[in-house]
Image 1 (cartoon, rainbow, N blue to C red):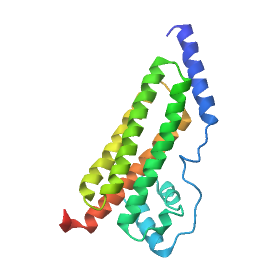
Image 2 (cartoon, one colour; image 1 turned 60 degrees about the vertical axis):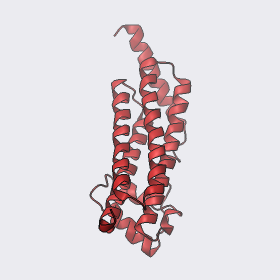
Image 3 (cartoon, one colour; image 1 turned 180 degrees about the vertical axis):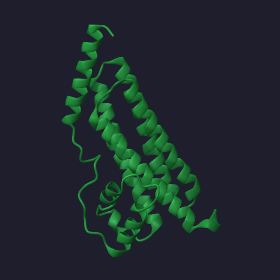
Image 4 (cartoon, rainbow, N blue to C red; image 1 turned 30 degrees about the vertical axis):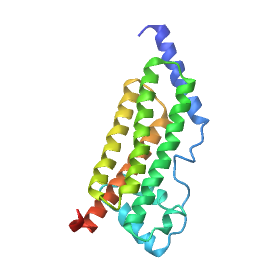
Amino acid sequence: ISPRNQLCLVLVIFFLVFSLSSLSTSAIIPKANVSLSIPSLQLVENLCNGKAIQNRRFCLKALSTPEIITAMDTTQLGTLIMKSGAANAKAMLTVYNELIKKLGFPQALKALNCCVEAYKYAILSFEMVSSELVEDPQTTNYDVAVIGSEIANCEKELINAKVQAPRLLAGNRFKKYYVSMGYEITSTLELENPNEY
């Protein structure tokens, strides 16, 4: 790489890190804990102890919002998880779109556009799964798994473009945690309703 291109790459990476540090993280990282009611406490504990869960602590924190603690059964909890996953994806999509507006480095731009498409897909899939959860957990289980591969493609593109932005990497990691929660809840629903599908 020529010295001029190295300087451009260093400046782009600095700009990315600087601009990311000024953006709010509240929509991406789950809010603080709220005390859980007894039925939802057991549902959340069971889910967050599941095999597919990648980060138990994140799971417990993400599922301690006032809306989610009202869940009285697995289906309702699953619907709320999907809605939360969609909201998280929308927050990250906003971050990527803001970066694209500020950035002019072609290699990084290609990676960011790939991530925008991945997050658009995640939003649509989480919303679709939320509405179809009751009818067909087996299909929704597959749909949630595909979100994970889309986010993995996004990460791969960022790495290949040498985009070193801790906020983007953290957002992708959190999205994987939401995918693992979605996968766990759809797997649980399949087991609860084996004769229906």
